[in-house]
Length: 132
Image (cartoon, rainbow, N blue to C red; front, side, top):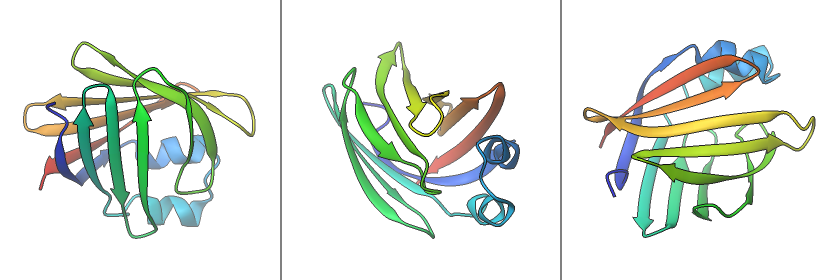
């Protein structure tokens, strides 16, 4: 339950390049890099409720580990996939609906930070969150 709590984005690593590879236009990439994303995670066994709040939208996502669900990124890209727990790491395996290409996502606690890693077409990006 180490993920539980409110987390605010602190910094990004290679995030603009990742968004470019995902096909996000330059204006949305610039805005996305400074979205002030805050994530609130609530875990109850295998069930998660994640509230994402940014400059662009607020959304509640409910999922159960290992169960496929649909999700839209802030830029409108639609995905289908699931999260699983592998050791102490949440591992998301998603497929883009528009082109069928895979997107991997990872969430793990490193020290006092939540590190969210994305991998798409060989491009890896990280977002680092501090607990609020």
